[in-house]
Length: 333
Image 1 (cartoon, rainbow, N blue to C red):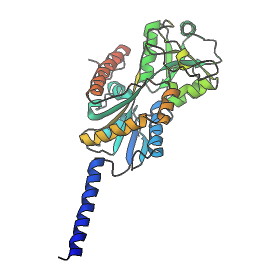
Image 2 (cartoon, one colour):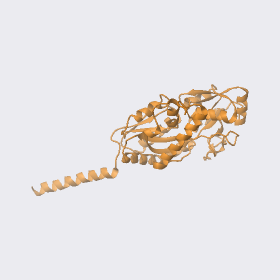
Image 3 (tube, one colour):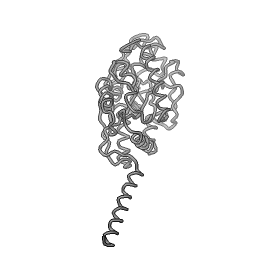
Image 4 (tube, rainbow, N blue to C red):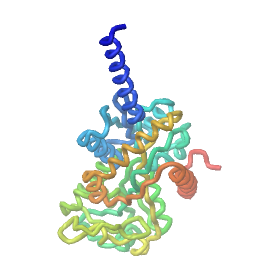
């Protein structure tokens, strides 16, 4: 072997080692586009959040492969959940969940549980607000409940036997007022129906109705949390999220928060989960994410690992109890 050949071999060996070392330093990362499944319709809170995450990842080049948002809303999200359940071991699929992660299998009997997925991270908890049309005469929860006791009013929400209808049932249980629940395909449509006067009230998430509040078309009566929302920045000329009283302050003892979480199919590797945990941590640090949290009045709690798993187990049991009370269980004990 000549000196030149020997030197060339050494250089090639060093180059190969550098490439291998760089790959090892980076750890696992996607090798093809990542499908981001939304088990809900377009325009709702989960869909909006998924598309914000997609935009952040692309804008800030947080991942080499593209992220593709796909809505799978059929069967109250069962379509998306079952697809993810059947994708065992696939690290190129993510699912953004709302609380239909619990309610859909309980209400329909579809063979799915959150335990059929791999929890990655809780991105936030979403609030619910009791909204009415700004042209209505109802300026408090007491006004609305009194009217509902005189004539049956219509509450609009997303889906049947899901979060919105659970809250509607809890309102009836707590107040004695009877409402007709009207289901729609997504939270965006629910807000539009209220603006148009086709329903009397909604229990939409803040992000689903905020543009109509800011335009003066909708009025918030209360928030379904145990404490007022934290953000004090003015969203309208006169009101911030923090100015909305809790429903308990208004005499309605009902509270409910909804999950916004990221999951993968079961059977994926720890290093693959770690990649997406890190990715979502980077997403949470961007100004676009912080703006979404402020605009949508989100509770910014985030969890991973065992703490997230323990939270999911508790919420599963809580939803079973809530749905049993409402008579929504497909297979009551």
